[in-house]
Length: 250
Image (cartoon, rainbow, N blue to C red; front, side, top):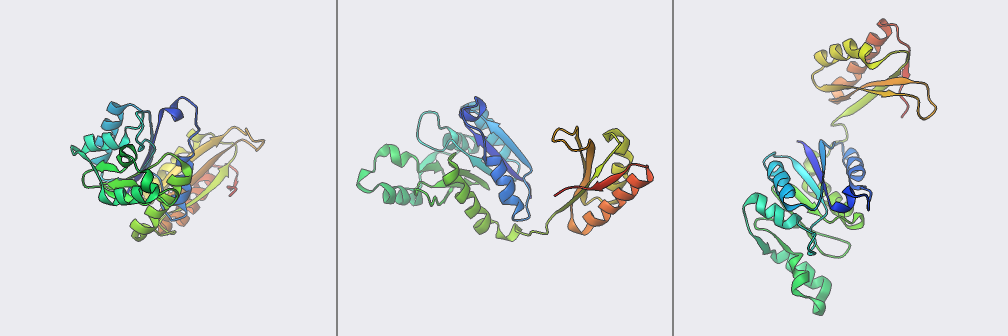
């Protein structure tokens, strides 16, 4: 199952805010043995947002979307999700209950708008202030504020996808190879990739920016049943090619 993300808002693209959602989601998934497949940054442009959501809904992926679900003029996510699905927005009864519970006698029509979701949605509870997010077609829409969004996303992972949570679902191992460029390590990478279809072989060169010795991090990630043997084959190929290496720092 592929897991993707959208981070939505002009404030990210113009530099008024620094995105923290992608790093959070990578860590939250990794703790549960899962990985992020893709992440896309989108501004507050309804046409682009609707097009991106249309493609994403058709992908069959699990997707977390951060931001743009409020009721101010620059919040378009709810409306664009409905447009991408070809359904109207409607006040969700569970969202209405939560919002009325939050505001009581101070409820207003504008506040209730925050509970208008694409028809067919279910809500995501918000432990911070009871203003819910929503899910439709395996896309989970949460606010842009980390103190709200992150507990909501973790709740989704732990209650809706418990069947996917397996810390041994993938494994990774790597070495630091010295005195070699990436192109010189291609044969070893190709051999391991051909022998072990359940893993991906990766290389990451370092120019010694942090004061370390220049090297290429060479490794594998994927099926735990294959990763260990694949890494040993990679080491053997590097040794046969005459390049020194050490285990990568963790």
